[in-house]
Structures are given as C-alpha cells and as structure tokens.
Amino acid sequence: MLARFSRLRFWLAALCLAVVAGAAMGPLSPVVDAQRARTANDAVYTDAQAVRGRALYQQRCAMCHGERLSGGLAPPLSGSAFLEAWGGQSLWDLLSKIRNTMPADDPGKLTPSQSADLVAHLLQVGNFPSGEAELATDAAGLKAIVLPAQPPIASVASRAPTLPATGNLQQLMAGILFPSSNIIFNVQTNDPSVPAKPGEVGKGAFSWVDWGAGIYSGWDLVDNAAVSVAESAPLLLTPGRRCQNGRPVPIDRADWIKFTQELAEAGRAAYKASQTRSQEAVTEATNQLADACLNCHRVYRDKPGGTRADPSNKAARCVP
Image (cartoon, rainbow, N blue to C red):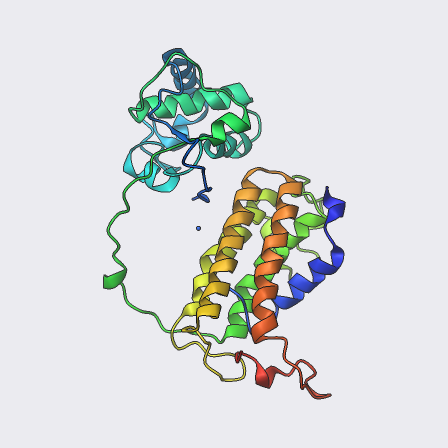
C-alpha cells in the first residue's frame, strides 16, 4: 500500500538528486526463467482470436499504427522494428501496454479479452504460428511467454560525433534528474490519473510540473520523467564533465559506472511501473530510484568536514 513508503525516504531521495555528485531504456526487458519460458513461436493463440483482434485493430488502432501495422503516427507493430523494441519481453508486458495506455486518445477502455485479441492479431501478422488454445489474459501465464529477441542492428555510434559536456555535474542533475525524479516521487502522494483542477496549472512561480500539466496528462508526465531519468543517466559518463568544484567526474571508476547503471535501471523500472497506470506500482518503484541515488551519494557526495559557510563540504565531492 502507499502508506508503506516512508516520507523521510521521499525527501532524502529528492535532496540527494538535487546536488553535485549524482548517481547514476520503448520498454524494460524482464528476466524470464529460461526453464519455464515459452515463446510466441509455441502456437499460443487461435486464428479465431486473431480475427477478432484484426477487426478491433481496424476500429481502434489502424489510424495511428497503420492499416498493416507498419507504423505511421505511432510506431510499427510488426517487423524488425517491433521486435527490436519488444523482443525478449513477455506477452504480459505487451498486453498491459495495450490495455493501460492504448488507444492514446482514449486509454484504459479496452477489456483484458480485447487486449488479448489484439495481441493475437499482432502475432498472426508477425507470422507466429496459431494453435488450438486462445491466448489467455492471466498475468502468470502471459509472463511466461516471451517474444523472440531481434538481432541488434549494427551500431552507428562509431560514426557519431562525440559531443563535449556543456554544463557541470550539478547543472545536469538540477536541470534534468532532480525535476524528473521529483515528478516520479510525487506519485507517492498524488494520483496522476486525477486531472489538475481549473486554475491550478501555471499559477504563481514557474513550475516544471505545472507547465507540463497544461499540455500532457498526469501519466504522460510520469512516463516522460522516467524516460528522462533512464536516458540522461549515461550523461554522467560524458568525458570531460566536471563537478561543481572543478574536479573531473570519475567516469573511469568501476563504482561510478555501476552507480550510473543503477540509476538508468531505476528509470527504466519507473517507466515500466508507470505503464501499468498504477499509483502503487510507481510508488514501489521509487524505492529503487531512491536507492540508486543514495548508493552513489554515500560515496561521492556526503562528505564530512564542512564549514559554517558550506556545511555540505562541496569542495570534497567527486572523490571517493
């Protein structure tokens, strides 16, 4: 329950993201027990179910994802691009994504059976074999069925330019990670599904959350914040970046790399939780985000020996 989360932890995590020595994803791939896992190649749906799904797809999905699932306003739901995004993930993740967030202009209205029918249609278009039993809607069964992974596309990173750091570590934290994380932590006490009241948005001093609330739904804001945490975490490893005190960010140290990876993983976990549209699930995910922050700050930020003018001893940060 929401009450299980400590408010002290909320403020500790928010504070730890606000300052210099930061800690350190599309959908998150779950770990599936290989001994019990089935795949979409194991004939997990029926032709009749796919027919129902095709009719529903044309009514509710084709406008954005294309008549043949090849994409358009929204991403493709077939082919290599689809498997690159969803390969290795369970059918439960796919069904939950459809049920909780689709269609984008009217989410949360599809029933579990309708969502399963749509998944069956996707599998049929993807040339996965049909079988004698319909695809079920229970979490336990669908979590044990995964989509086959798509071989990764050759990286173009070697041809991409290496961009220099513009700001110091404190600016990166305060500009992206601190506000984005606080949007996620805010879910502990505020339900994103409750729309802002008229007159509340944009009132008073500039607010990161209020500004976005005038454009995006509450859950969209949480989605975007979680993606921001996951995607910006690698910026903590940008060569040449310095801390606020001028020391180089220790990007070559194994523990710094580990802390960065933990933050990126926490962002991906928060995104996956947000996709469920469950306030409790996101609240649980904030534990991982708080831990990722705290693990790094114990080593690189929380330094003794401060003065009255600087009790936080910023001069000693970025050194283990």
